[in-house]
Length: 145
Image 1 (cartoon, rainbow, N blue to C red):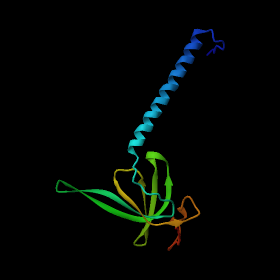
Image 2 (image 1 turned 90 degrees about the vertical axis):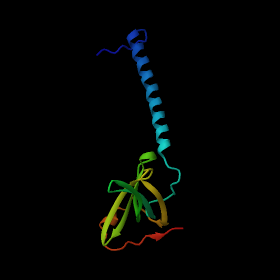
Image 3 (image 1 turned 120 degrees about the horizontal axis):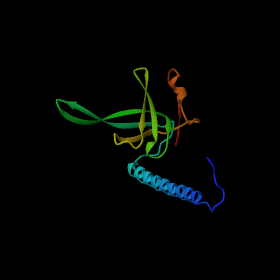
Image 4 (image 1 turned 30 degrees about the vertical axis):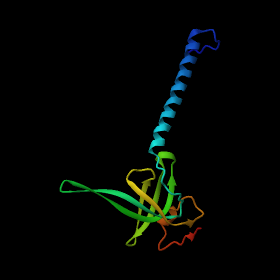
């Protein structure tokens, strides 16, 4: 492939025009994606961090005899991680159930989450609390303000 460096060649000018047009289309599509993401973001989410104890209300749809019934199931535990940003942000909650560790990862802005309530504010010095998976027994997290 031969690339012409002088600006007098019409092919070179056409290449420059196409590249500029493509950049404008990419910016327009990014703006469209941002607008769609803004519509999906919930506004009523409380501020919580890793180490907080939260109560998450999940919407569960049960089908019995052809009838759909919706109920809310609570999942209370310690937030061990938060990942992502915008509409794709997720958080992981860990709890002990009958001596067995149970973890669930929730999308923050999911329509299947009815509510998120902060039960207790905990202060930790880590961004992720994955070490709790291997830890036996209770782990004491300092209470925050």
